[in-house]
Structure formats: structure tokens, C-alpha cells
Length: 156
Image 1 (cartoon, rainbow, N blue to C red):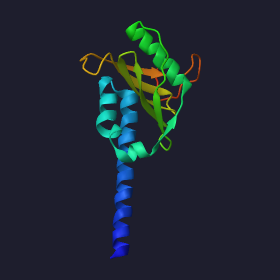
Image 2: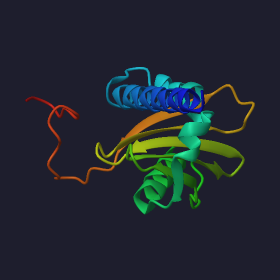
Image 3: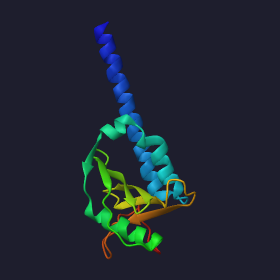
């Protein structure tokens, strides 16, 4: 009976792990291909942000390039200058950086995949403001080689 319970727990843990991997793969697909940018962070919130296994598999991290890009995006949206110091977590196995930051009275939430050099964020001026700004961004430096199949620039 004890061995049977252990096997069931192992099977359940494997199923949760496979399901989590599938949901993160779907987030990657949305990040690269979604035409409606709200789908990216809505999916992140609905399927991953509240998942204890996902949160527990993430570690605190710092990512200066994300901070800089978020600052530029927020300055462009709000017209207000400031410094972004997000709470950032890294899902090590998936190469996914995710988190949030306060910006004056507003809030920005973001996701970013290291291997794609692509991320997305949403910004709300307040938690009750119905207007939400969604932005997809890339940290690929100008003139850098682009990964085939992920980013399309002009003609092939």
C-alpha cells in the first residue's frame, strides 16, 4: 500500500510538471505570435501566476536590460520619468523572467524569455483604471543576428 501511494504521488507530480511545461510552451507561442497582445499577459495571469508549482520553481533575479526597457516603455506611455526596480523572478528551467513593478501610482507586469530575447508587459495607471497598455518588446541589440523563425524583419 505504501509503495502504491508513493507511485501515485510520483505520477501526480510528473503530470503537474508536464502540464506546467505545456502551459509555459503555450505562453512562448503567444509571446511570439499573438496579434492581440492582451492575450499574452491574460494567459500568464490566468494559467501561471497563481500556480504554486510555477511560483515555487521561480527564483528572485535581477535583469538590468529589462529594467531599462521597461523604464523606456513607461516613460513613453506616461510621459513621466523614473527608475524601474521590479520584483523579478526567474523560472530557471524555462528561461522565463516574470514580475511586476510599481510606476508612480500605476503597475507594470511583465514576462520575458531569455532564449527569444522577447518579452511583453502591461501597464495600468491604477488598479481600477479600465485602460491597460500592452507592449511586446525585444532586447535584441540593433544589428544583431536574428533567430530564424522567431522574428521577421521585412522581406525574407
